[in-house]
Amino acid sequence: MNIKDSVALVTGGNRGIGEAFVRAFLEAGARRVYVGTRQVGNAQHLVDAAPDRVVAVALDVANPEQVEAAARRCNDVSILVNNAGQFSMRRLIDSPDMSGARAEMEINYFGPLAMCRAFAPVLARHGESAIANVLSAAGIVAVPGMGGYSPSKFAARAMCTCVRAELAAQNTSVTALIVGSVDTRMASHVEGFKESPATIAAAALKGIERGAHEIDTDFMAVEVRANLARDPKAQEMQMRRSLTGERVTTGRR
Ligand SMILES: NC(=O)c1ccc[n+]([C@@H]2O[C@H](COP(=O)([O-])OP(=O)(O)OC[C@H]3O[C@@H](n4cnc5c(N)ncnc54)[C@H](OP(=O)(O)O)[C@@H]3O)[C@@H](O)[C@H]2O)c1
Image (cartoon, rainbow, N blue to C red):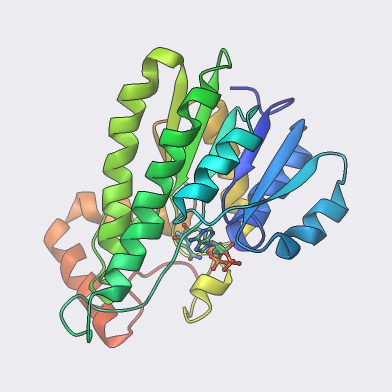
Protein backbone atom coordinates (compact mmCIF):
# COMPACT_ATOMS: atom_id res chain seq x y z
CA MET A 1 0.00 0.00 0.00
CA ASN A 2 1.55 3.30 -1.10
CA ILE A 3 1.15 6.16 1.35
CA LYS A 4 2.36 8.63 -1.28
CA ASP A 5 -0.62 9.98 -3.24
CA SER A 6 -3.06 8.16 -0.96
CA VAL A 7 -6.14 9.82 0.53
CA ALA A 8 -6.36 9.24 4.27
CA LEU A 9 -9.03 9.83 6.89
CA VAL A 10 -8.02 9.90 10.56
CA THR A 11 -10.73 9.84 13.22
CA GLY A 12 -9.97 11.93 16.30
CA GLY A 13 -7.31 13.55 14.13
CA ASN A 14 -7.32 16.92 15.85
CA ARG A 15 -4.91 16.04 18.67
CA GLY A 16 -2.74 13.36 20.28
CA ILE A 17 -1.89 10.27 18.25
CA GLY A 18 -4.45 11.26 15.60
CA GLU A 19 -2.71 14.57 14.96
CA ALA A 20 0.61 12.70 14.64
CA PHE A 21 -1.02 10.47 12.01
CA VAL A 22 -2.19 13.52 10.05
CA ARG A 23 1.29 15.04 10.11
CA ALA A 24 2.91 11.71 9.17
CA PHE A 25 0.57 11.27 6.18
CA LEU A 26 1.38 14.80 5.00
CA GLU A 27 5.10 14.15 5.42
CA ALA A 28 4.83 10.89 3.47
CA GLY A 29 3.17 12.64 0.52
CA ALA A 30 -0.51 11.76 0.95
CA ARG A 31 -2.58 13.64 -1.62
CA ARG A 32 -5.29 14.57 0.88
CA VAL A 33 -5.87 14.00 4.59
CA TYR A 34 -9.33 14.26 6.10
CA VAL A 35 -9.20 15.12 9.78
CA GLY A 36 -12.23 13.62 11.53
CA THR A 37 -12.97 15.81 14.53
CA ARG A 38 -15.92 16.38 16.83
CA GLN A 39 -15.37 20.15 16.60
CA VAL A 40 -14.16 21.30 13.19
CA GLY A 41 -12.52 24.38 14.75
CA ASN A 42 -10.24 22.09 16.77
CA ALA A 43 -8.48 20.99 13.57
CA GLN A 44 -7.86 24.49 12.22
CA HIS A 45 -4.14 24.34 13.10
CA LEU A 46 -3.80 21.30 10.82
CA VAL A 47 -5.77 22.88 8.00
CA ASP A 48 -3.53 25.94 8.31
CA ALA A 49 -0.45 23.69 8.11
CA ALA A 50 -1.42 22.44 4.62
CA PRO A 51 -4.58 24.21 3.38
CA ASP A 52 -4.42 22.53 -0.04
CA ARG A 53 -4.27 19.00 1.38
CA VAL A 54 -6.02 18.95 4.79
CA VAL A 55 -9.81 18.94 5.14
CA ALA A 56 -11.51 19.03 8.53
CA VAL A 57 -14.66 16.91 8.74
CA ALA A 58 -17.21 16.95 11.56
CA LEU A 59 -17.16 13.37 12.79
CA ASP A 60 -18.30 11.89 16.08
CA VAL A 61 -17.78 8.17 15.52
CA ALA A 62 -20.64 7.40 17.90
CA ASN A 63 -23.03 9.40 15.72
CA PRO A 64 -24.34 7.17 12.87
CA GLU A 65 -25.59 10.13 10.78
CA GLN A 66 -22.18 11.81 10.92
CA VAL A 67 -20.43 8.55 10.01
CA GLU A 68 -22.69 8.12 6.95
CA ALA A 69 -22.28 11.78 5.97
CA ALA A 70 -18.48 11.45 6.21
CA ALA A 71 -18.51 8.41 3.91
CA ARG A 72 -20.57 10.35 1.35
CA ARG A 73 -18.37 13.44 1.55
CA CYS A 74 -14.96 11.72 1.75
CA ASN A 75 -15.68 9.36 -1.11
CA ASP A 76 -12.06 9.16 -2.30
CA VAL A 77 -10.53 7.73 0.90
CA SER A 78 -8.03 4.91 0.34
CA ILE A 79 -6.69 4.64 3.92
CA LEU A 80 -8.97 4.78 6.97
CA VAL A 81 -7.39 5.19 10.39
CA ASN A 82 -9.75 4.47 13.27
CA ASN A 83 -7.92 6.37 15.98
CA ALA A 84 -10.62 8.12 18.06
CA GLY A 85 -10.91 6.59 21.50
CA GLN A 86 -12.14 7.12 25.01
CA PHE A 87 -10.77 6.01 28.37
CA SER A 88 -13.18 6.48 31.30
CA MET A 89 -10.80 5.16 33.99
CA ARG A 90 -13.58 3.18 35.68
CA ARG A 91 -13.76 -0.31 37.12
CA LEU A 92 -16.28 -2.93 36.04
CA ILE A 93 -17.75 -3.85 39.45
CA ASP A 94 -16.78 -0.94 41.64
CA SER A 95 -18.46 1.77 39.55
CA PRO A 96 -21.85 3.30 40.33
CA ASP A 97 -23.23 2.27 36.92
CA MET A 98 -22.16 0.92 33.53
CA SER A 99 -22.21 4.23 31.67
CA GLY A 100 -18.40 4.35 31.38
CA ALA A 101 -18.16 0.79 30.07
CA ARG A 102 -21.00 1.44 27.61
CA ALA A 103 -19.40 4.66 26.34
CA GLU A 104 -16.06 2.92 25.84
CA MET A 105 -17.71 0.10 23.89
CA GLU A 106 -19.63 2.66 21.83
CA ILE A 107 -16.58 4.74 20.92
CA ASN A 108 -13.78 2.14 20.90
CA TYR A 109 -15.68 -0.76 19.30
CA PHE A 110 -18.99 0.22 17.67
CA GLY A 111 -17.55 3.50 16.35
CA PRO A 112 -14.68 1.86 14.41
CA LEU A 113 -17.06 -0.88 13.26
CA ALA A 114 -19.51 1.72 11.93
CA MET A 115 -16.62 3.45 10.15
CA CYS A 116 -15.45 0.19 8.56
CA ARG A 117 -18.98 -0.59 7.37
CA ALA A 118 -19.59 2.91 5.97
CA PHE A 119 -16.20 3.18 4.25
CA ALA A 120 -15.89 -0.37 2.90
CA PRO A 121 -17.56 0.59 -0.44
CA VAL A 122 -15.40 3.74 -0.64
CA LEU A 123 -12.21 1.73 -0.09
CA ALA A 124 -13.36 -0.84 -2.63
CA ARG A 125 -13.08 1.77 -5.41
CA HIS A 126 -9.28 1.53 -5.17
CA GLY A 127 -7.11 -1.30 -6.41
CA GLU A 128 -5.52 -1.41 -2.97
CA SER A 129 -6.72 0.19 0.25
CA ALA A 130 -6.19 -0.07 3.97
CA ILE A 131 -7.79 0.23 7.38
CA ALA A 132 -5.68 0.75 10.48
CA ASN A 133 -7.26 0.47 13.91
CA VAL A 134 -5.53 2.08 16.88
CA LEU A 135 -5.77 -0.49 19.68
CA SER A 136 -3.85 -0.89 22.90
CA ALA A 137 -1.63 -3.25 24.88
CA ALA A 138 -4.73 -3.32 27.11
CA GLY A 139 -6.33 -5.16 24.18
CA ILE A 140 -3.89 -8.07 24.37
CA VAL A 141 -3.74 -8.33 28.17
CA ALA A 142 -6.67 -7.24 30.33
CA VAL A 143 -5.87 -4.40 32.72
CA PRO A 144 -8.28 -4.35 35.70
CA GLY A 145 -7.65 -0.65 36.33
CA MET A 146 -8.96 -0.05 32.80
CA GLY A 147 -12.11 -2.07 33.41
CA GLY A 148 -14.29 -0.87 30.54
CA TYR A 149 -11.53 0.26 28.19
CA SER A 150 -9.63 -3.03 28.10
CA PRO A 151 -12.62 -5.18 26.98
CA SER A 152 -13.53 -2.60 24.33
CA LYS A 153 -10.03 -2.87 22.82
CA PHE A 154 -10.19 -6.70 22.97
CA ALA A 155 -13.45 -6.49 21.03
CA ALA A 156 -11.95 -4.08 18.52
CA ARG A 157 -8.97 -6.40 18.04
CA ALA A 158 -11.26 -9.34 17.27
CA MET A 159 -13.18 -7.09 14.90
CA CYS A 160 -9.95 -6.46 12.96
CA THR A 161 -9.61 -10.19 12.26
CA CYS A 162 -13.22 -10.51 11.11
CA VAL A 163 -13.20 -7.37 8.96
CA ARG A 164 -9.83 -8.36 7.44
CA ALA A 165 -11.37 -11.64 6.26
CA GLU A 166 -14.51 -9.94 4.93
CA LEU A 167 -12.60 -7.29 2.99
CA ALA A 168 -9.79 -9.49 1.65
CA ALA A 169 -11.61 -9.97 -1.66
CA GLN A 170 -11.64 -6.22 -2.32
CA ASN A 171 -7.91 -5.99 -1.43
CA THR A 172 -8.40 -3.84 1.69
CA SER A 173 -5.77 -4.67 4.30
CA VAL A 174 -6.63 -4.31 7.98
CA THR A 175 -3.83 -3.53 10.44
CA ALA A 176 -4.29 -3.73 14.21
CA LEU A 177 -1.97 -1.31 15.97
CA ILE A 178 -1.00 -2.38 19.47
CA VAL A 179 -0.02 0.77 21.33
CA GLY A 180 1.59 0.97 24.77
CA SER A 181 1.91 4.21 26.70
CA VAL A 182 1.95 7.47 24.76
CA ASP A 183 2.39 11.08 25.78
CA THR A 184 -1.11 12.44 25.10
CA ARG A 185 -4.00 13.87 27.10
CA MET A 186 -5.48 10.38 27.50
CA ALA A 187 -2.36 9.23 29.37
CA SER A 188 -1.77 12.45 31.30
CA HIS A 189 -2.31 10.53 34.57
CA VAL A 190 0.35 7.94 33.69
CA GLU A 191 3.81 8.24 35.23
CA GLY A 192 7.01 6.83 33.76
CA PHE A 193 8.18 6.59 30.19
CA LYS A 194 5.67 7.53 27.49
CA GLU A 195 6.35 7.24 23.79
CA SER A 196 5.86 10.24 21.50
CA PRO A 197 2.75 10.23 19.27
CA ALA A 198 5.04 10.72 16.25
CA THR A 199 6.81 7.41 16.98
CA ILE A 200 3.48 5.57 17.01
CA ALA A 201 2.37 7.15 13.72
CA ALA A 202 5.70 6.38 12.04
CA ALA A 203 5.56 2.71 13.09
CA ALA A 204 1.93 2.52 12.00
CA LEU A 205 2.57 3.90 8.53
CA LYS A 206 5.28 1.29 7.99
CA GLY A 207 2.82 -1.41 9.07
CA ILE A 208 0.12 -0.07 6.74
CA GLU A 209 2.60 0.06 3.85
CA ARG A 210 3.44 -3.60 4.16
CA GLY A 211 -0.13 -4.70 4.90
CA ALA A 212 0.79 -6.08 8.34
CA HIS A 213 -2.02 -7.81 10.22
CA GLU A 214 -0.88 -6.59 13.63
CA ILE A 215 2.09 -4.59 14.86
CA ASP A 216 3.45 -3.48 18.22
CA THR A 217 4.11 0.21 17.75
CA ASP A 218 6.35 0.89 20.74
CA PHE A 219 8.49 -0.53 23.51
CA MET A 220 5.70 -1.09 26.05
CA ALA A 221 3.56 -2.98 23.55
CA VAL A 222 6.50 -5.27 22.75
CA GLU A 223 7.22 -5.76 26.44
CA VAL A 224 3.62 -6.61 27.35
CA ARG A 225 3.38 -9.17 24.55
CA ALA A 226 6.71 -10.74 25.55
CA ASN A 227 5.71 -10.98 29.22
CA LEU A 228 2.37 -12.49 28.24
CA ALA A 229 4.08 -15.17 26.14
CA ARG A 230 6.65 -15.89 28.85
CA ASP A 231 4.31 -16.24 31.82
CA PRO A 232 0.59 -15.39 31.36
CA LYS A 233 -0.29 -15.84 35.03
CA ALA A 234 2.55 -13.61 36.24
CA GLN A 235 1.47 -11.01 33.69
CA GLU A 236 -2.12 -11.14 34.95
CA MET A 237 -0.97 -10.74 38.54
CA GLN A 238 1.21 -7.82 37.55
CA MET A 239 -1.75 -6.16 35.81
CA ARG A 240 -3.77 -6.46 39.02
CA ARG A 241 -1.48 -3.84 40.48
CA SER A 242 -3.19 -1.33 38.20
CA LEU A 243 -6.13 -1.39 40.64
CA THR A 244 -4.01 0.41 43.19
CA GLY A 245 -2.61 2.78 40.60
CA GLU A 246 0.80 1.10 40.50
CA ARG A 247 2.86 1.04 37.35
CA VAL A 248 2.08 -2.20 35.54
CA THR A 249 5.22 -2.96 33.53
CA THR A 250 8.90 -2.46 34.16
CA GLY A 251 9.23 -0.37 30.99
CA ARG A 252 11.78 2.26 30.08
CA ARG A 253 12.24 5.31 32.26
N1 LIG B 1 -2.18 7.62 25.02
C1 LIG B 1 -1.96 6.35 25.25
O1 LIG B 1 -1.15 6.00 26.13
C2 LIG B 1 -2.67 5.29 24.44
C3 LIG B 1 -2.27 3.96 24.65
C4 LIG B 1 -2.88 2.97 23.89
C5 LIG B 1 -3.85 3.28 22.96
N2 LIG B 1 -4.23 4.58 22.80
C6 LIG B 1 -5.28 4.85 21.80
O2 LIG B 1 -4.86 5.85 20.92
C7 LIG B 1 -6.01 6.50 20.37
C8 LIG B 1 -5.81 8.01 20.45
O3 LIG B 1 -5.72 8.39 21.81
P1 LIG B 1 -4.77 9.56 22.32
O4 LIG B 1 -3.80 8.98 23.25
O5 LIG B 1 -4.29 10.37 21.18
O6 LIG B 1 -5.82 10.36 23.20
P2 LIG B 1 -6.32 11.87 23.20
O7 LIG B 1 -5.20 12.82 23.06
O8 LIG B 1 -7.20 11.93 24.38
O9 LIG B 1 -7.17 11.97 21.85
C9 LIG B 1 -8.38 11.28 21.71
C10 LIG B 1 -8.98 11.71 20.40
O10 LIG B 1 -10.18 10.95 20.19
C11 LIG B 1 -11.22 11.88 19.93
N3 LIG B 1 -12.52 11.31 20.29
C12 LIG B 1 -12.95 10.87 21.49
N4 LIG B 1 -14.22 10.43 21.40
C13 LIG B 1 -14.59 10.62 20.10
C14 LIG B 1 -15.76 10.35 19.36
N5 LIG B 1 -16.87 9.85 19.93
N6 LIG B 1 -15.77 10.65 18.03
C15 LIG B 1 -14.69 11.17 17.43
N7 LIG B 1 -13.56 11.47 18.08
C16 LIG B 1 -13.51 11.18 19.40
C17 LIG B 1 -10.86 13.12 20.72
O11 LIG B 1 -11.62 14.21 20.25
P3 LIG B 1 -11.85 15.56 21.14
O12 LIG B 1 -10.61 16.40 20.96
O13 LIG B 1 -13.07 16.14 20.54
O14 LIG B 1 -12.04 15.13 22.56
C18 LIG B 1 -9.39 13.17 20.40
O15 LIG B 1 -9.19 13.72 19.12
C19 LIG B 1 -7.21 5.98 21.16
O16 LIG B 1 -7.89 5.00 20.42
C20 LIG B 1 -6.57 5.37 22.40
O17 LIG B 1 -7.37 4.35 22.95
C21 LIG B 1 -3.65 5.59 23.50
